[in-house]
Every structure is written in structure tokens, then in C-alpha cells.
Length: 300
Image (cartoon, rainbow, N blue to C red; front, side, top):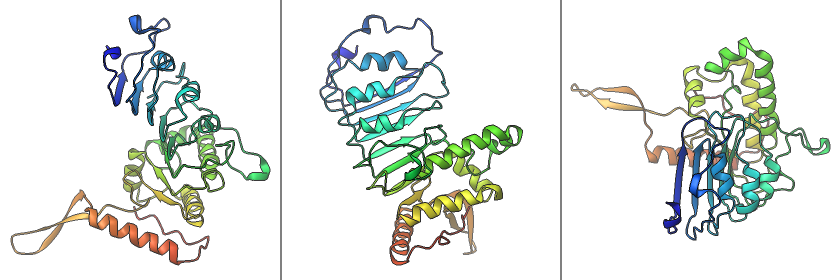
């Protein structure tokens, strides 16, 4: 069917079911397709065989790639091989995977990226000692990335269901948090000279932080360190809504019959409020000299 849809500009595919050792694409196997206009490709589920076939396709206009492996940990798609073929024009790359990937090699093959999303839970090789204490996310400073999105991080602040798991398996939680710290330390302007914002993408994490009224005391130092790192380089640290991480949504105010006002629990914030807060935050960061203790307390 795909061979008669050569005019597609965007393609979203979701693969359901469990992987099979002998899975094939049937008649589509080995078929070389040309999508001259396709600029956006998004795939989700177990799509190893599909991606292997897509490597041979002609995708001259591909600029956006989003892949979500769900919970699969074995026989994961070869993203590196795919971007070696199709990564030259990509400006947006979003990878959601539990298994670790070679970020440095992936970014090396995607020089035009402006937005990159990955999983900081990944255990990656450390960068050379003389460069710092972060992970090796790049071979050379990436010239174009302005926005980095972070999936997962469920263990980073000691809240939600991950806090329960951490109490049962403290070693695993420690290793994941250590990976979080190494990877976040590498999100700097030495590696990404044009970096403007880091966005925490996990919606569940934001809800857990709100319910817990902020990070667990045992993880508050991490919160401060990450904020200091971003503020010191004028990098905006955001939550999944685009607001500054730690900003609570405003409650709606409703007028009652007697003319008084009551607030509802609906977490709605109007556009003008968001813009005003962003402008004030930018002015504050621009006007004040950086000090290690400048970060505000998380307002969860």
C-alpha cells in the first residue's frame, strides 16, 4: 500500500503485538520506496523490521523523526544505522527507549538537529576526565541544537511510585540517579553551544512532584544543582508544559451568586499569564549576576 502513497508528507505508524523471531513484512520486504515529500516520520511499538526496511527507502526531505520503543528492551531497532542513512537533514529527533543508545554517534550523524529528545536514565560512557564529570553525549560540540527534551527521570526527585521501588531496590535507584546526574551534567554549552532550553517531558513526574509538594528532601540537592547548572549558563529549565520547572498552574477563580469569588482546582493557566511569567523570568536571569544560590525553591 505504501508504494502508492508516494505523495505522503507525514507518516505515523503504531505496531501492536509482541515481537516474533520470524516476523517479516511479507510482500513489502525488500521493496525500495521513494517518498519525495515525506518530512515527518513517527513510529511506535515493536518496529525493528520496519525500520530495517525503511533504511533502503528514498527519503530526501525527512526532517523529523520520532521513535518510541515502549517497554521493549530486547531486539531494539537500530536507530544509529537509520540515521547514518537518513540523519543528514533531520532537525528534530525524539527517541524514547529503555535500552541505552550511542548518543554521541547518533548526534554525529545528525548535524542539522535543533531539537533532540532522549532518556537520561541511559547508562552512557563518561566523557574524558579533563573535560568534566558528565557523560559523553557528543564527539564534537553540536553546532545547532537549541532544545533538549528529557524522558523518564522518574527516580531523579524521589517522588511517586519510583520512590516506593527505590526503597525496595536502593542499588538500582542509585545507579539510575547516577546516570541522571552524569547525563544532565553533559547538557551544557560546551557540548551544545546554542542550547537555550532543557525540557523535562515526563507528565507523570510533574504530577508526582505536585502531589508531593516538591522533591523529596534526599533529592533536593539534585534539584538545586541542576537549576544552578542551567541558570549559570542561561539555559531555561522547563517542565512538560513549557513552564519553568517548579511553577504551579494557576487555579481558576469563579464568581458566586453573592458576588464573592472562589477558586476551583482546575489547573488552567491562560496564555497571557504564561507569556508574562516567561518574560519576567527572562528579565530576571538577564539582569541579575549569576550566583550559585540563585535558584528559587520549587513551587509545587
